[in-house]
Amino acid sequence: MKKLMFTLALSALVTMGTQAQKQMGDEHNIEVSFTPFGGSPIDGSTIKYRNFLEDNRAIRMSLSIENSNDVHAWYQDGEVSTANPVSPQLNINTKSSSIGFAPGYEMHFDGMDNLSPYIAFEVPITLGNRSDEQEFWGPQDINDAGQPDQYVVWNLGNDQSFTSVGVNILFGADYYFSDGIYLGFEAGLGFGTTSFGNHTITTDNLTAFNMFFNNAFSTEDAGAELMGEFVGQLPFSALEGVMFNEYYPDGSGSDDIYYTAPNHVSNTTIGNVFQGALRVGFLFD
Figure 1 (cartoon, rainbow, N blue to C red):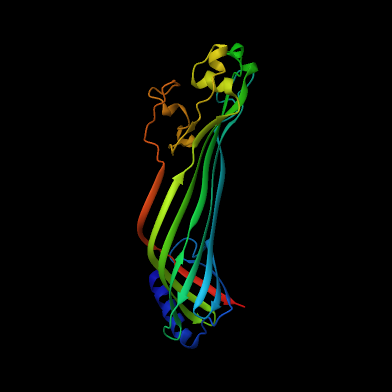
Figure 2 (cartoon, one colour):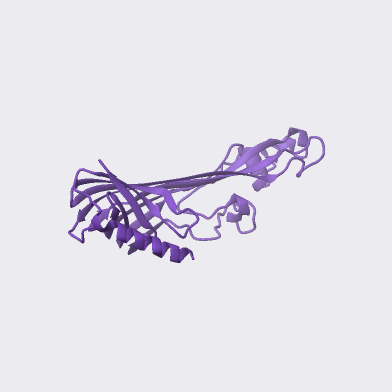
């Protein structure tokens, strides 16, 4: 039924657009994605702006921003210890963010009265970061082991950033079904490369960290520097318990670093570029 209604609506738009006005030059244009069969028909996560220098030339810029910050309680009050003092609630904080922008240029060609086909090129750039932080409760001094009244909350962090850069050569078309309002599609060929920044592990309490992960019960061992920076991407997920000790063969600290998987340093791709959603936009002066 959804597909039938969409087909009828699209047919009506085509009929309505017999004399629709296309771009003439000097207009501005805002565009979003149209996904009629998705949960949110209008997707504004990526917004594209165009400025028509003439009726057949336009500069363009796409912008996408994503941000997520979630807090989870992985231990409730008293779940670790019900004795006095009662253990506190311990949380896991997961964060991810990215910002992408893609400057470009379009050249439009003569089409039907309502159709404006074009070729374009753009340079998409994306900067992203992902980090998990996990809280622990335990001694912060070797003399406090086994004395819960001296325990403190400390945290362990895991962080990874990435940068993606590409070049796309695109073909697209805009169909104006009303004055200044259109539906369109876009596809083409693209080249892209992604590189990962150094993977880092951090803690706000080095002694507590060494006692928990490295079984350090001497002053020298408890003060050992954290080996917390690695070249390339390492998988991690605080929600699945993969934060630090899973990088060692027996699940505990060791001077000999061992990884469960190779570190992904970079990625390069060449292939088709296709925007699965329809594009919907409007012109304004």
